[in-house]
Length: 107
Image (cartoon, rainbow, N blue to C red):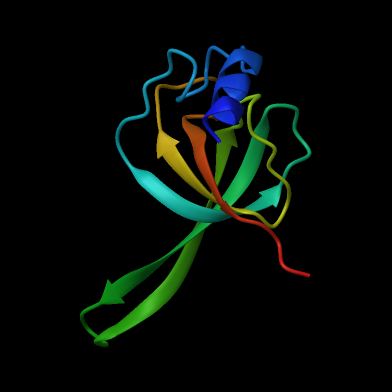
């Protein structure tokens, strides 16, 4: 098991990898579902949350779509559950990085 991790560390040459590169993941951490993996090094992740309305004493379900960078050592596909972490801005619209793959799509 440890030899596989070492092999991945050698194979990963991405500077923006939170595990093998120099990118520091700090700030908010979300768990979401991958909606699109059509970009080269990025994915679109949907993050759902509940917002409370005191007037009605109810919760409303809301969601937001976030673009996140995918390190070269991970293979992420549409439908996967992932954990994303906030990082410094990598481009105009990407300020999150995929930190961990939680589960795959069930058929």
